[in-house]
Image (cartoon, rainbow, N blue to C red; front, top):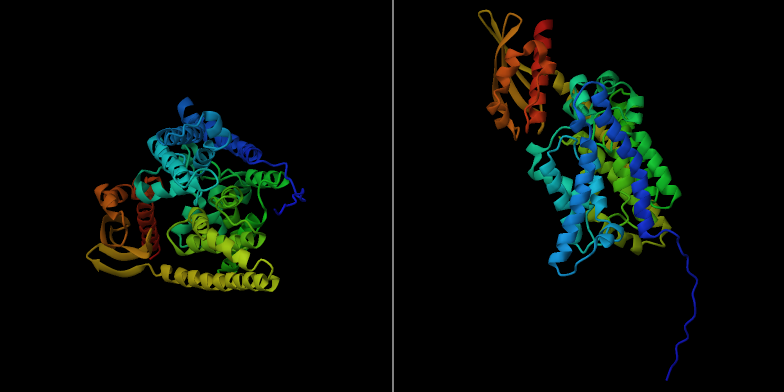
Length: 471
């Protein structure tokens, strides 16, 4: 009978366990939670806005989805007859982690009942795939995408009570998107102070995304403790910077435009904390580089070419889907350095070509948007302009007839629209509200459920008013 000899092999042992890694992530997120509590809870009350209940809303937005996540997993395993105790759910299944991320990426004013739904969907997307380590999608992002698709009209805004009263614009990226992706420094950055405000975090946004400084410190902490790999965030952010730099140069904008894109929205938070999830992102060095480059291209495509001003959430979920193919590709060409270099080189050339095409496209679109007056006619002492402008669904989505008597608007009528939620605008009698409050356009609230559509209508009316005054 043949005997097999067994001997000890050479192994590299890491001191990091999954448990330790998850707690390192929580530690890295803790300063962000504290800052968001100060910015969106304490500061507004100090400034005279809100009360003790509104002050604790940022913490409630984080705690509730964490609790819901634990109970959803508990109930799921209980129904399956595989009852897990809370120690397992917290220390091995990490049921609270998706909820923590949900609280940090969802808008501040989202109704609590909807936060609970997000948490349920996120937890189910995890356990139905087999639990921790087997989920295909990042649970938190999947949950937020679900409500974005099916409960969009109920999702609240990102501004806290103090920002609502002091900032006339929405989030920086929403403001940029509303103006076709290109704005001058004063309009894009000046509205919120300076780029230093973007770096520190004194701008509107979700709880976790505003402070670039704390995200960077979290990245350093996680890299030092070998919790995440640096390649995905590094290449992701670098590609966003390169694309925005070239697009900016095509439109006579300085390097501030690139910094604006890097420091705005959920890019840093998503790149550092979401795109580095070891379960749903590539495992090889080459795969991580590939994912980072693709994430940058996808994010800037969404930001500059669609009506979705952010792009990080969808980009990461798309890479989640592609991860299995990226991993297979990495295995096949693992020892072929030349082929790896060719693929990465091709993608970087694609980045440059893509940037030039988008930059020139936006430049041409800006020229078109100058000619927003389609027609004008004078009948007696009344002047009517037919104006066409940008909407949530893209350029030239809204056409209005705006009639002036002297220097005052006396009527606004909708001629044509491709907007999905234009019915909500009509139901709110929004055009008549603009007529009645034309001297204070900035103070007119948008329509709930049709925020962007109503914002674009108001902006188009403002442009026509300015044109009428100058002509």
